[in-house]
Length: 284
Image 1 (cartoon, rainbow, N blue to C red):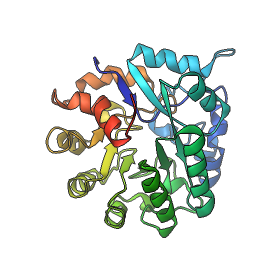
Image 2 (cartoon, rainbow, N blue to C red):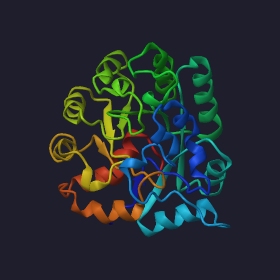
Image 3 (tube, helix red, strand yellow):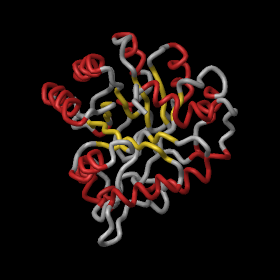
Image 4 (spheres, one colour):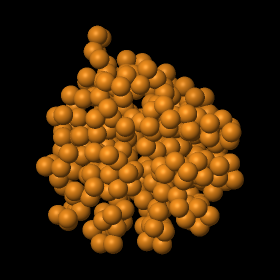
């Protein structure tokens, strides 16, 4: 790809990736989930989240980014590796913050602190992974949405059937309809597919100016047809690239498959970079 992509969901490989999912693993009830290294590994083959002894996770990630022409990666706050990456390579990484709205005051304070200290460009959330689960239209999210508006940053939320073996009704795309109505100034980005409600996701994006979609956790050959068709017609400004490295997909697989996605020529620069710059108001 000639365009230096902005990857809206990227991480750093780890020698102990299993530990990252202890909280999610504890929520699952089936024996199979307890044994999985990665709570949704039944859907992914050859998960690349490992690190050779002595390797620097930041340098490994940068090497993959350079190889596949990823200019900037969004990385979640939560450890010293991310903080170091932001300090050492501010031109290559932007920070996001994951929140659980069950602690409403605590979440809002964390958002403001992360914005002041690390310049986060988005708040992210996994409704089905909250404990207890919280639909995006629930009142517990509303102070978080207002904080995002005040800071002029988007909220990124999982939409559709959850990958881990957890109930998924809280991620029904219809919940976004109420949120868009109540918060017309809020920019919302749906992540992780929105299936099986991807057609509804398109209808809602047509309806609401502030609702967007990113392709995280999907190999390009599995991008929903409704999403590709929408990007090629009225949704060229609404669909954005996001990967899933190293959590579930390698950049090699993503960028090897991407040329086979039937986007029209004018869609590619918007999809890979321009929409992200606009929606997340990046200085690049």
